[in-house]
Image (cartoon, rainbow over all chains, first blue to last red; front, side):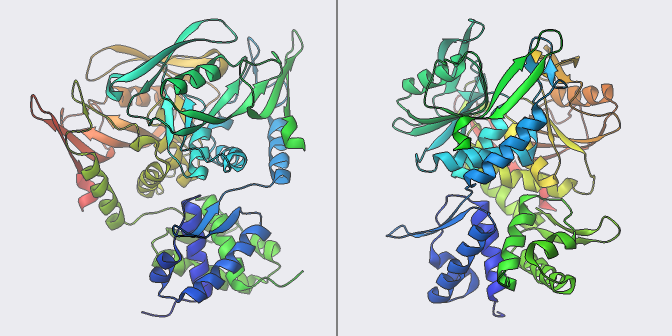
Length: 273
Length: 273
C-alpha cells in the first residue's frame, strides 16, 4: 500500500469524525485505517484540533481513559450563533410571512437543510453537557430541527405522535390541554421507543403557552425518563408566562398591528450574553 | 497572518464542502479564505478529490464554466450501498419487529441519524442526475430520510400534510384513495411551498399499493411540478403491482406465517446489479 500522506489522513479523518458527531473513535481505529503509528496519529489530531478551532468548524476533543479516543462536536460559538439567529430573525420579520389569524409562515425555514442543520447545532452546543440519550419531538414541523440536533449530539430521535398508530405497536397515550386554545389533545409514544431511566432533550419548533411541551414532559414521566433540557426554534412573546420553565428558544416572536399585522422577531435573550 | 499549510487547508475544505453537498464553491472563495494562489488551490483540490474517492467518502467534482468551481456529492458506491442495505435488511428481519396486523416496527430505524443519513445518501446517489429542485414527502415517518436526501442533494424539503393547517396559509388540498385500505384521505400543501415549473423527487418511508404516492404525484400536477423520481425506504412484496411505476425502494418486505409472523426483508433488485 502506498504511504498515505498527512494531508490525506487529516482530510479523511475530518470527514469521518464530523459525519458521526459526539462519537468517540479510538486512535487504533485511525492507525489501522491509515497504517500509521500512534505517535503520528496523535500529531495529526493535534493539528486537526487547531484547524477545526481556527476556522470555527466545531471542536475536536481527546477523551482519555479506557474508552478513550477522539470525538468531534458540532459546537457553534455564541458569537456565530447570535449572528446567525439575528440574520434569520430579520429574514422572518415583516409583513409578508404573517398569515390570517396572526400565524407565521415558517415551513420553508423549518425544512431547509442548511438552516435546520445550523439551528440543530446551536441547540446541541447548549446541551452536550447535559448528555441526553435521545431527543424527543412532537410531530410534525419540529422533526427536521430535532433530527439535526440529535445528529449533532450523536443520539437517536424519538417522535411522539398525535394519536397511536397501529404500526408502532403498544403505546402510552396521554391527554393534555393545549395551552393556547385549551383543547384536549392526545399524545402517543410507542413503548419500544425509549427505555426507563434514560435522559432526554425535548426539541420543538414552536412554544406558545407550553401545553404541548408540558404534555411531552408528562409523557416522559410515564416512561420514567428524565427531561434534561428543552429547546424551541421560536417562542411567542405572549403569554410571557409559559407552562414550562428552564427552556431555551432561539427566537422570540411578537405580532403587532391590527389591520396590517407585522411580525417582529428577535434572537432570545440568552443568545445576547 | 501565518501561512496556512496544505494539510490544514485540505481538512477545512473537506468539512466546508461536505457540509453543503452539491453546492458549487468557486476557487476564489477558498483562495480568499486561505490566502492562497489559484494554482495551489487547484492542486489541493486534485489531492482532495483522490482522498475522497480512495476512502469512499463521496465525490469531489470540478465544474467548469462561468458558474464553475468545485462541489462535493455524497455519493455511495453500489457495492457499499448493497452491503449497507443487506445488513439493515437482516437486522429488520425476523419475528421481533412484527406487530399485530402484520405491521413492521421501524420507527427507531427511521429516526436514527446515522441510518437515515446513509439511506438519504444512497437515494441521492441515484437522483443527482435528475437534478430535482426539492424533495417532497408526506408527514410523518418519512421526514427524516427525506430530510437527509434533500441535504445530500442540496435542495429544500417540502412536507405535504394530512390536512391543511392554519399556520401554513392558503393551501391546495386533494383527495386520494389509499391503495391498501381504500379509504379516502386528504393531502394538503401550502401554495407558498413550491413554484410552478419546478422538479421534485418524492421520498417516503413505505410503499404498499401506492395510493399515497399516487396522491403526491397528483398533488404535484396541481402545482405544475414535474416528478423526476420516487424513492422509498421499503416496499411490500404484495401487491406486486403498485399504482405508481418507475420508483426505487431500498428494501422489499414480505411478512409470512400465520400464528407466528416473520418479516422477510431483502434489498431491492436494482441494488443487486
